[in-house]
Length: 146
Image (cartoon, rainbow, N blue to C red; front, side, top):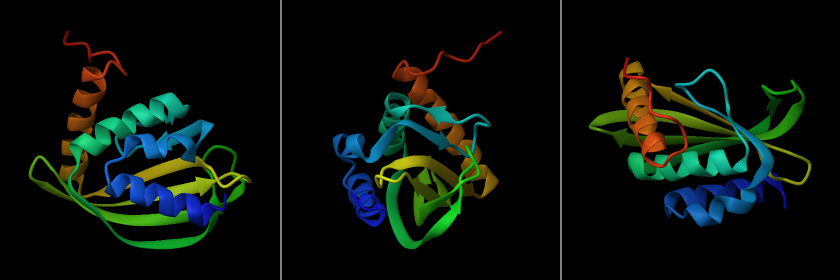
């Protein structure tokens, strides 16, 4: 599978809110770098779980453009075929503008995924909504109230 084909399938799955269609697009050890957490989400099960939350959290999500090329990965600083998908969405009444940076392995699977979002108020709304969803789905422990 070529990386461009993977990116097209990814985009179609997200736009259709089809979580199952994302399953075979990621490497087993995929890493997702989010705008609200310093350490990445690691591994296909965790990343798919996160996408389950994201697909519920974003309202009026739409991709509005894309660029392709290559870029250094965060994990090993190697150049990898890369595609940037630009999106707009709403979360709890906040308008979000962001990019998804998809980076691919030799087989054309997504090995690294970085999300960047603006403005800061939208990042905070997204972070709170996603944490709530991750806790609800049992993917992360509830934050310590104490």
